[in-house]
Image (cartoon, rainbow, N blue to C red):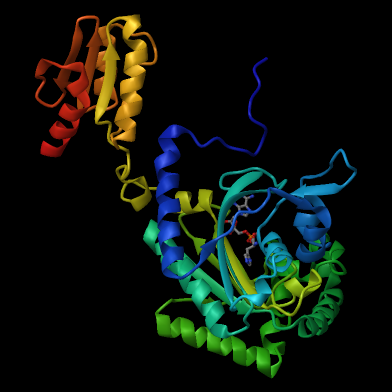
Length: 421
Ligand code: HAM
């Protein structure tokens, strides 16, 4: 029996690499221009970091975490998301003492034991941004515009932005009780799984597909109508700034996110180019998260976008991401040799060529000279140096011309030839 990859993961093969590199390159450029700095964090953390912040009642914590005990008896979890780890690092490294907000970005893989389907994996990649240390509505608006710019730059199609506000934890608790009362009143009309979750997670009822529940939810009270004056004002300012930046959005009071740490602004970008898993990226404000980890008040806001979904949303013949490779490095020199005694010299010449800044490759598979020239052609080499017992020759692959050269002059000739091209 051959061993295959486990369910829900995927390999990124060489032919796809360029698309990924392109998205990464664009993301880096956009983050640079917005003044974000990269952060790289461990793949696993203490389980309680996620349990305490994402929320005990969420799907992620209840059934999607890859949790294990290490040899020292600690409960560890492969990170299912990046916000809690970034806040942990912010606190651990005293970043609250820096000028605020601290603006960080990451590009990493994450792990969730979800039902695998198109666009949904058990190991997936996210590009994420977190701005921590300010509750200014301009932070919310800036992070949203940043993601809009990024999706635009990579060529994601048919993107729509929904935003809402969840207010403060207090307003949400009062609203939750009101919503539970509404659900209990209409208990008989609800689907059984919504009914079972009235106590645990009543907000998820807004996500339900069954017609009975949908009808009940159409008449349900909305959190947006229950915000404190301060939170409503904050949300109005975020919207005004988005208007000012020309970013279109819909206010959707039914928007629910699958993580509990959110306060105030929440948002989601969807693409109609995707199927059922239409969420390209989402996020929001998390004003109590750093404090929940034992830190000082440090309100934050951010988002994450799935790279697989970004690629799916941009992937068509005309899509920018599937365009021609933009950065295949040129092969200036291929070093061939006709006799095994010349292999060490070929190796030395290739190393020297690379140090001189040339793209260089050498024969690595024991081919005949004919086979080596074919290989040089395949990799797109500009020149081929042929080392033999008799000396050295240089073949210009563009003109097809081949001439004997002094072995010590090979590099100089290639550098000159390349300069002239
Ligand atoms: P999230 O909505 O759970 O938020 O994930 C963000 C994005 O990651 C989704 O919109 C989707 O594109 C991608 N994603 C999530 N799960 C999967 C999966 N199983 N397969 C493929 N792609 C997936 C968060 O993770 C928050 N940490 C975002 C955030 C940052 N909020 C504030 N700061």
